[in-house]
Each structure stands twice: as C-alpha cells, then as structure tokens.
Picture 1 (cartoon, rainbow, N blue to C red):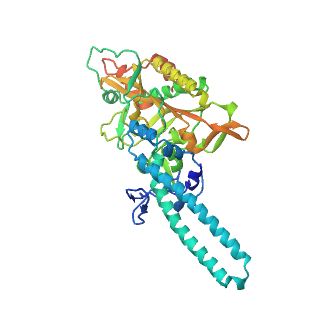
Picture 2: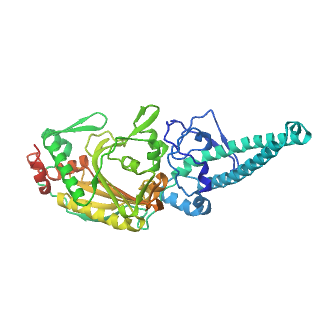
Picture 3: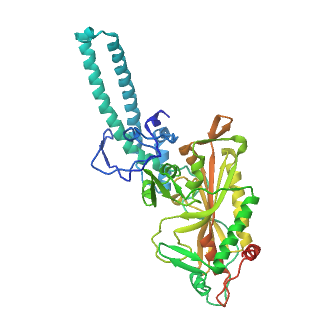
Length: 469
C-alpha cells in the first residue's frame, strides 16, 4: 500500500478537464503540459491536486499486482476489450516507487541538516561550517522540488489507466454470449401483430415526448402500478429491505463503481455550493452504494439485501426511434446485496432463482444469457442478462441483469465487514436490475395483444391491477 500514499481522493468540485502527457521511449520522463485541459479524478489524485482536498476514501487498487503480474493483466484487459498499455503503466508505477524512495531519503537528509543548524549559534551559522550546511539544505530543497514535480507528473499519467483496470473474470465467463436457459415459446398469432407503440396509440395509453421520454396512461399506467406492487411483494417476502436514495451522486461514488471520465462527463450535472452532483436516478447503483462507503458492517449482519423501484437515467444509445425499449428515463427494479466472500455464489444463485420465478409467473417467454467478457462493465466479474421476447421485433430484448462485482467496488470505496470495530475483509457486492418496467410493459402489450388491438394482463398481475383505483 506504500505506492498509494500519493493517491489522494476527494469529494470536492470536479474540474471537467483532460490532462495530456507525453512519455519518452524509455518511460523515464513524463512531461506535464500546463496549457492543456485536464480531468481530475475524485477517487485518486496526484500530489499536485491533493492540497486542500478532502480525503473521502483510501482505495485499495493493488498496483503491485500490475507491476509483478503485468502479463496476466494484459490478458485480462485484452479479453475485456479495454485499451491500456500495461507495460507503460507498470513502468510508470515502478518509477513512482523509486521516486518516492528518493524523496523520502532527501527529506530525511534535509531534516538532519536542519537539526544540525538548530544546534549552531547565530555566530556559528555565519561560519564556513554553517554556510556549507545552509548551501546543502538549499540544494536539497531544489532537488526535492524537482523530484516532487516529476512524481506528480508520473502520478497524473498513471492514474487514468490505473482507474481503468477492470475486475477479474469469473471462470464461467467466455468470449461469446451464451444462452443459459429459455422459458416459454413465442405465441403464434393468427393475425398481423402490432408493435407496442402502435398498441399504445390505439388504446390511448402511451405517448412519447422529446428527450426519449414517455407518458403512460390508462391501462399502461395501471400496469406499471401493478408491476411495482408485484415486485415489491416478491422482494419483501424474500427478505429485501426497501430503500429510497437520492437522484444525485458525487463523482467519487461514480468512479468507485467503475465509471470512466468519458462516462461521467456525459452525465447531467447539477451544481450546489461549489459541489457537482450527477443525475443518475434513485434506483441507480451509485445511489445504493454511496451510503455504504467507508462503513464497517458487523459480520453477523450480512448479507444486507436492499431494493428500490425508481428512476434510472441513461445516455442515448444513438437510436432515434421512440419505443419503450430505448427510453432514457427508465423505471427499474434494482437490488443490491452486500455479502461475505464465502457466501456470494449462494446469494447469486438465490437471486437468480427469485428472478426466474417472477418471470415464469408473469408468463412472457424469456431467456437468460451469460454475457461475454468484452461486454462486461469494469466492475463486473460475472453478468447474466434477462431477455424478453418482443413479438413485433421477432427477437429477444434485454429487460434486466444480475452482476457479481466481487470486492471491486468495496475496495475502492472502503466497504468492509468484521467483528466489533475490527475489520476483517472487504464485502462482496451483487447488484441487479430485475426489470426495466418500460421494457417489460412493452413486451406484455405485444405478447398479450388481441385481434381487436387491445391487450390482456398476466394472471399473476390481475389482483394487483384490479385493486388500483
């Protein structure tokens, strides 16, 4: 952990800038161009940005693993489709360690000279001996200043790539998507099927607005309320606790969850008293994670199981068609499990069984897909996606997922467990989006449409649907 002493973190105001560097072929010099714009991380920052910054967390990123096992890390990022020059990063980290040792020794020498000067009287300080000591002290301070600048430049060059190192891969992850199981068979309609957008117009229950948003009215609105109550009952019975967080989060939390500067800079930002807050939605992973940062949970209290049904905001994917499958303002059923490392696969299996039961009861054909390594998010060790059948598109569309993040996030945001005040280890995180309600509603409308242009409601939802005033 000595290497990370210089890596400072903060929750202060973000500087939406990008820092550019150039590095020699020997990787022994990195030049910092003050004229170029730069991006300042709030999870890790160099000594150049550390002064006056509130230290929120001390992330454990294990840079020694990159230095000692660079070939292994190269294979990891190659399989993940991430562009990082690991050899250059490893050389930078080595140089940082060497500079830290030099700076430490120089500071000790400067302190020793200072102690010698303090022992001299004013008259002795004017002597040859005193003059030589002062000269050496001045030279050391100049060298320290030069070395410190070199260290800061190397830190600034290494941090962006260090933050991009992804989670390890679960042994089950492959290079291609793999269908794990399928449930139900698509209906064979004896009439020309309609898209949910057309059904929404015919039934006056769906209207789209600019910015890829939408209104649900009449039957569609009642269907969303029914689904909300249904999933709430299922999760509550399974022992999950309902929590509602803020729609906004800080940059340090986003970076702790594996977001990149490019992702963060595309998000909607709100400024408050000099602090930047990012609009993610109260059912987003950062909204769940933020209260857990820098916490020590009693081992006997694990697992912690939370859920929320709320807003999730995402960037446009480039498509301009108005459908419930592509909205930017989403309503999702989100869960988070914080568990012991020894129990995470049991918790993962339990959640998979719960999601499968929910979709079987709803009765829409679906399949479970194990996602390939190159499509995993940085924080994910394993990801399974749930896909529902779209009658009009004649294909499966993604409605949710379940992800194992191991201790990737907890190491970044200091989420630990132990006994009393004694820390033992980092918790494992399992997060899921059980359902995107707009996508689920669109698939229900299409799969349960009738020849007269209306649609029916799944049997399991009828009691909830009929109780809505």
